[in-house]
Image 1 (tube, rainbow over the protein chains, first blue to last red):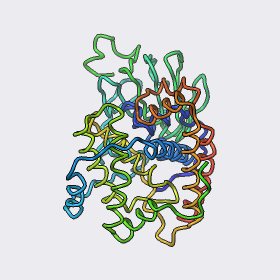
Image 2 (tube, rainbow over the protein chains, first blue to last red; image 1 turned 180 degrees about the vertical axis):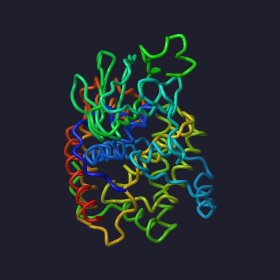
Image 3 (cartoon, each protein chain N blue to C red; image 1 turned 90 degrees about the vertical axis):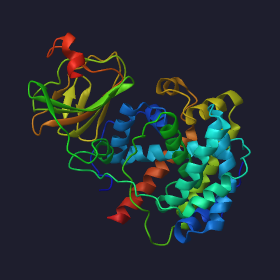
Length: 215
Length: 185
């Protein structure tokens, strides 16, 4: 499916898009940004512009001499057969980049309490990214995050102290934002959320058990 | 100042010949133009000569293999190859697959719109000019940012970013995307 025209009002800040285009965002954030661009024509245009700027840097780069044989090796391989790379299409509310991480399969949800479910897509020392399923009217469990937190709405909507976020909207929260997102009435809210530290739910599970559940 | 050119650049014509006619001679000329720049670009972030050449090979092979994705109405050749190079560097150096947005699909098969291609190239030329006019220290910050050497926080605190030219590029690019998608429906 091509870029959907929804009324997206919360976009990716420019510095974040520049960092994504330059490839300096850790994978969890890059996944959220790539997913937002998949849904948002405005941010795709900004992404294209940053690529053009990167192209200008490449174009003016100092030229380095290539060893003998590099070109010949490339030309030799032009006809070599290559296995086609799988292309992961958007599926339901999940954009292509999310489907790629899910390897084309539906997410495996795990209950974290209060009707809230999550599906961890990746968790490393650099951060984690997960899908969250929040029933209408339910708050995202009280959580803290050490640094930047990006949340992209894929279905339904939520509201918190800073505003309302619908499908395609991305909330950027830093460590200073104490917020309590609540899923609006209507469809359950499904979000893609990335943090640079394990998201800690303060109330549901004793802190000691958190490493076990990786929440 | 680069004079606004009324002709499509050799690189774009070569890339279109690669895309549409699998033209090896055109690819060979693209290699001669881009491979030394790519190697210089990759080595600037501290990659050794041998590994840089391996990445250059991978990037140029991707240019050949994914040529069908090249759309000169959206990106000039340097911008397109820049992105391929950064993706490959991340794959190799960080050993992770960089998440990429959904592709918009192959470019429209009908006759390319020369005025659109020229507009994209003209903006690319303006970006290069803007880069050349910067003071050396400012220019270095921009180069570091697009080489992937600055963190998101560092980019946020840099006032030199974004260049004013990028802003107008964004607006025009959005108009073109809307136009292209409308035609595709």
